Image (cartoon, rainbow, N blue to C red):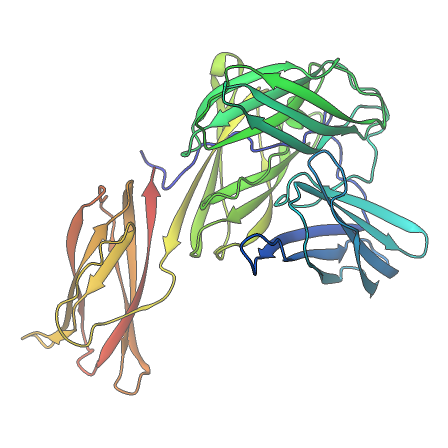
Length: 451
């Protein structure tokens, strides 16, 4: 397998439009939603801190800006009194980070954010899970249906029946018809386990209507890693039906909140907006998203790869945009994610003695104290161990040799492109010329996984 650490994922709890629209002309753009709960007792909920970035994306300044956050159940019921923070004025293009702190907030599954500005104007945003990034609900889809999932409550019972209710709203100006719900279950490695679809409710939703609609899926997997819920319509264009998706918040790198826009009806090119989340505890680099599009009978019609520029820090969510040229008609797609993982902190050379592996369930790189061989070349022997349960490759080591005063003497890079199977160890030696004055060294490393 040529790709690095990858995961196959179709959707994780989608918010879906029935028809593709041009981007809404919002005055604001909300991003960077985070929420953390601080527990001070065994049973108490205690303090909840949420933050979001608010940017004025219009060409004019705005005044009297205030932001109100409301925590809710998956079905839209308020669970805590709204919290309001005042920003004041924002220049065109200016951003402000807003933080909401509250005590004893109950568990919530969704939220809404209302932005009031310029005296009488207002914009509304929502998140369909506690970890979902905010989405706009301001510009109605004129001449079409636009059904979005605002929240949900669902679970698999002991008999293997997946019972749930989704909170939906038709934000279009036309009634939605032939509504269908699609559910997909995945294992812990994000491989698809089971698909199911059915008519949602009576299949219709009036323009502007908001409703909680129950569903029941028989014979659902009792053991699974995650699931996705999305909506579709027989008359919907595929790019609208396949937009959406939310983060599953696993310890991995994942993409969600897809938005496909047909650039020109006369061409087959599409603009894609998406968010990438690094759920690992280490910085990642060379993150690649491979999208595989399928037509009827699961026949592959196109593959497209986008590499994320720069690095993504642990916990960071990055917003991306790119174009896919020449995309034929398709019915569904899969995504595969590859990345290189850096060690969290520089490792320092042992003062004396031979370095030993700690037998962690991770990739370990160790080096012994440096020596100067007979050719007056600094020699540093070490080894690499793959403690993971997946294959790894492309171990890249960056070493910094230090003078006695701690300043940098020189740096050297050493790559180990060969694959390492789970549990495998391999010796490695680094040679550095013109470095006999080196007193010590530090090093970092990164690698790619193959799942």
